[in-house]
Image (cartoon, rainbow, N blue to C red; front, side, top):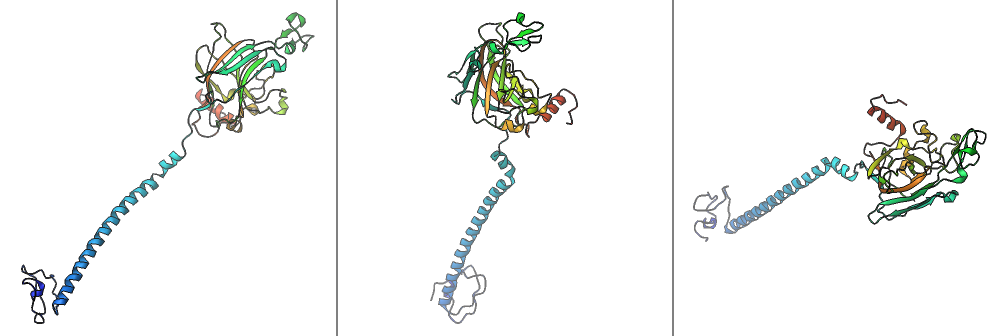
Length: 334
């Protein structure tokens, strides 16, 4: 016989149901009992069901919490894929460093004595990464010839030796050149050189500076000079440090190998202009003092390509259209 008030206090076999009340803890549903063991078995099963129900509820709760967190991460990753793509493929910078002299890679100095000239020059890099092209450009005697008159093409030293003409003096050159791997600048519009020229003489200006790159030769029908390979353009360095812009439209691969002066310009014949393939791999980069007699002292802090973030690759037509639009003119359909 069980304790009074408990389910086992009900007399065996003489009670079919037990109704819940404040004095017992019987399941609200009517319970058919046969004996005390069945009652105990019933309560034991009930306790087990309650434990399993609690465990199942905890598992379901944890599942939904985990599912919600995972779904949030998935949505963030999936819906934010555009941002991820942008970060994995960074946009092209507007300015690309082509040379800043801080990488320790050597530049080769070449002067016109290799062609019989008398010019002298050196190229050095300071501890703080500034390149210096210094020296003197002199007249190349065997290239100084009469221009015009009866003695046209003959060597001379002064105008009196050239009847009805004049003695055309031919200054030589000094240059610094670097070969190797360069960044792709085919989306850019030109170079900017951070430089200055100063020899110590306030009046000592020099007008023969040029920049060159590549190994391309002009079309054969233009009869390119023997030693003129690559693209070249002039630039003027001031006596204070300044950024000098040189658009790619200023370059030509048809230039005079005696003076460095451009013969056929990019504006006159698009075939002599740099093309995207030439800008993707510069191969060589050079700085010249050429075709003008005088003292040279050029400090170069950096050479960069500019306006690179516009998208697409550089072309003469696109560059000319852009220039004409900025000037207020109508772009050329060609």
